[in-house]
Image (cartoon, rainbow, N blue to C red; front, side):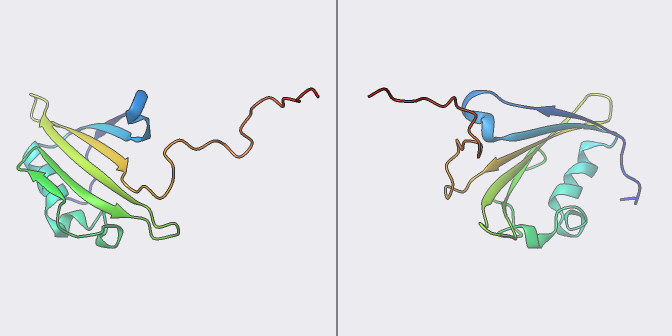
Amino acid sequence: MSNQEPDADAVVKIPAGNEATDLILEYELDAPPEKVWRAITIREFREQWLPGKDLVEAEPLAEVGGEEVSYRMKDSTPPYLESVVAFQLRPDGNGRSVLKIIHRLADTQIPMETKAANNNEPIMMCAA
């Protein structure tokens, strides 16, 4: 792998409904799928952009050869939340790759629906 960053076009998708806590990024990469797969699965390459200290385990949580791999991640600061990041890879038909990254909060320490500190709700007074 070269030190040059591949040309990439990024698309950020904001899901609706129950998937609203997922962060989904999709990149069109100017590299063949085999090369991208090596970058996300071989530890020496992965360490350059996803350090092992950010992972619960260095080994993948799940893997479907050449198509999808996921890792469990952890925060390094309190409240030390855990999340799962999945990398889905597919060819685009022109020798390039489409990489979809889905980052999902896996920790249940905090409620998934939190209100803003100022909650922006109108003040209601009760009549006596």
